[in-house]
Length: 288
Image 1: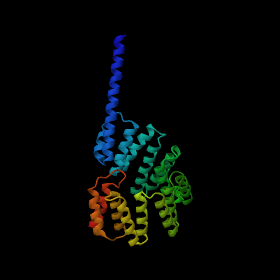
Image 2 (image 1 turned 120 degrees about the horizontal axis):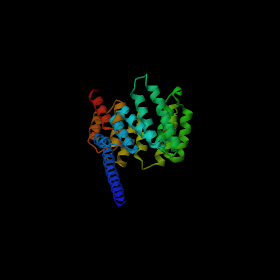
Image 3 (image 1 turned 135 degrees about the horizontal axis):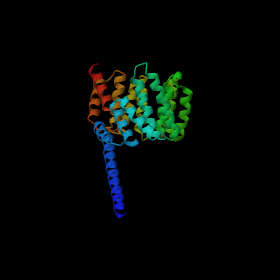
Image 4 (image 1 turned 90 degrees about the vertical axis):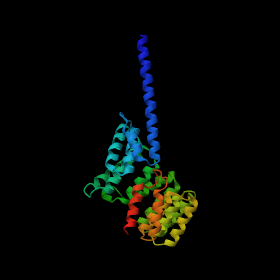
């Protein structure tokens, strides 16, 4: 009998050691992901022999950031199958199908877009406070045609739900709706309201700077970018936004090139645009 208990104690201790080791590896892989070392993070996560949903979720995020949306979808699908009530996994799966819709052939794009909508809706259903999922669902309704489930009225309803969580984001959403309806003065007013409600968020300033450039008000746009740079000096997010705006408007291309080169040398996070995207823009400038 005592031998049996000794064996059980040994098994319990071995399981505890394995769980600690697994947790340590997952944390190390997550840290690499946060430092945008997606390949390094993926290597560690992929070596797990019996992956939990969290491992599949991390694998999916890494493939997503590396631009392989098919492999990302496969990983997120496994995470959702293991934890179907998890709003985050459903949201990421929706994002991945959204990118597959953007990059797929016209034959496959509608099916992928519909799946993106379904998973966004499911993520919001599971967690009505998941603001990122609400934002993506709003964008989908705003951009997608009616036959794919889009519509301005649907977008407006989601915007109201966003407003209960984040008033500044609500006004940003209202600005996008107004712009779609060609109500340009209203759109600008809404962007300025969003800035006023979140005076420390540099992203709100960038939203206005990009909008002014889009409507040819370059001097005001550049002045607004300067306001953002004073708020967050050497911010990679500002470098990329300014460079992307210059390239889109086909002006200040030498400065755009310098900004992208500096961006690629910066310490980035997953919240910043991927380096691959900056590299593509840099090649675009070089070929201009």
